Length: 406
Image 1 (cartoon, rainbow, N blue to C red):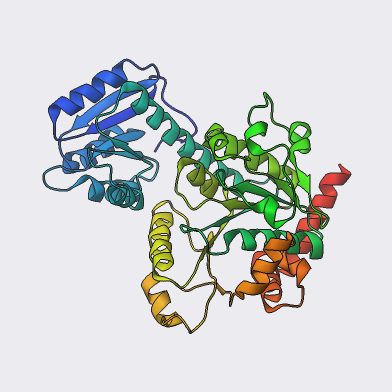
Image 2 (image 1 turned 120 degrees about the vertical axis):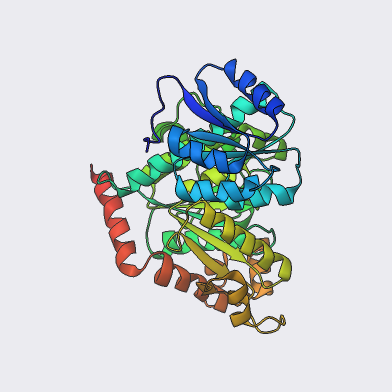
């Protein structure tokens, strides 16, 4: 199988799968006008496509959904489980969210709604390939021996209002103020980021300003960090929703990669989305804290997210499942909940809304504002027992000090 970091001299290789010959011809024509892309084959059905992948080893497969016999979603699942280095992009006239969700769970890296033009097609292929390449290079680097680097912890929820930012901020404060680690929080809730609000900071320069810089290094990024009195540094989200579009996956990968070299822990507060920027963040993360509440909508979305993350190749060692506002007053038993999610919940937080709201309104994290509260103690337990056990935390600080001494 090919190395994901390289492409053949003839260009990125593509297999087109669609039962309509007109569609195959049109896609071939569109790609024929593009330098760096080569159509190596076509298939009119999923069964033939799977055979040709084994014969031709295309780097990208454009897969139609509705075909006679095996449908494109089922074929995508088989291809991604058998040929892990092949990127599948699903094509369909159906643009509904449910179709996109099913495709992503099956392992597709993107979704194109027909009809599409040459620019949209080429951009989709290129970005999907770049994301997958970056993910695999990052994975290889993680297993290599080299310069010590910090850990990226992404805090994610598929639903808003579940305490995601509260968790991200308080985890960061425990690591910085109590464990004496070097910590930054990157606010990647690009349209409505609230990290600065929770820390009582007023952003001046933001991520959308940073990505306009011609170079990105430690000297360039330094003025963009805001520092809280506890030691946590924050890279703020854009101040207005319309600026979010200036931040693309490639920017995020570069920023997180640089932050790894500057901090022991990089906490990323994410938006409730599986957009391209979110997928890039999840791929780059060493650990994903997936958080939800005990309402049915949140649990349903958590289950869907777990299925998708499994298809993306994230193991249980990467995805840490947290249930917030946990208790027996919601009509759902913990055993039934875990059975529905098809896995154990790693950490329960019996959330007290009033202390959390008071802390947020004061712009002071609850571990500082109410350090003896049950919620603050629970955040410490999460850090000290799961995210950074004492020995690991002390090693991280030691690594940082060695870096500073160089």
